[in-house]
Length: 214
Ligand code: TMP
Image 1 (cartoon, rainbow, N blue to C red):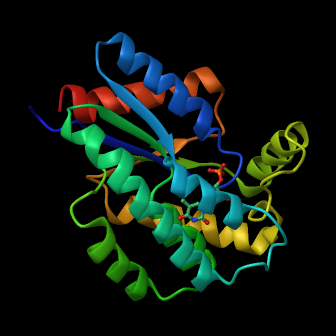
Image 2: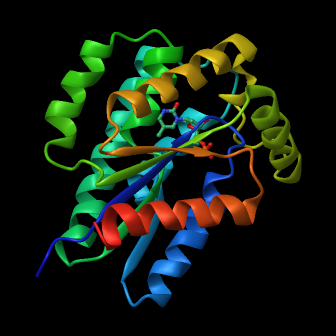
Image 3: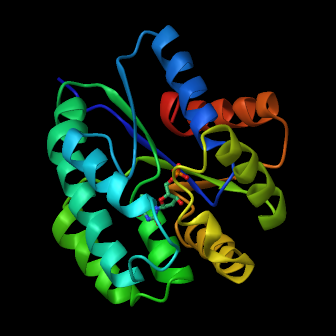
């Protein structure tokens, strides 16, 4: 059986990734593919338990280094229990955030040494690397306003990172832009300020061009 495909969605707060993950999963399913739609931190029972720890509480509850280690603990469990079994049976895995989020949040914006994060990638990810990464880009103030609206709807349950301040989010945006520019074969920058349907069309065009007909 051929290995499935691994697509990740990345970007700052309020970019609308979760909606687009659901829409892409539905399109791929109607094209006859088995799809596993998942997210990080989370995506397996153990990793969801770590998510609960890391996304709740005060902004300074964990240092960026501790966050890195928690994210990688969660990621390893997610890879072993969800991602690898799905890819092995030929499914397409569509994941809301993955390793680039650690590079950008804990590395670029949080100040953790990029060499340390690269070492974790080498040892923990091994050969589990995305075939395609869609990097959602939008102005920080637009994203934070959208994120605040979502947070009000769910009672501010998971707002640790949103509350880190504007300078953090500007560094974060630059870090994601730099990742996309440095790895153009893997990454595509998506204008996430556009309307939901337009973003969906752009995502689908990119997936078709890079993976379906690629
Ligand atoms: P979200 O995907 O619902 O936006 O929530 C996940 C939050 O966790 C988001 O604020 C980004 C943060 N995060 C990191 O800081 N590092 C990581 O490696 C991952 C996967 C997420």
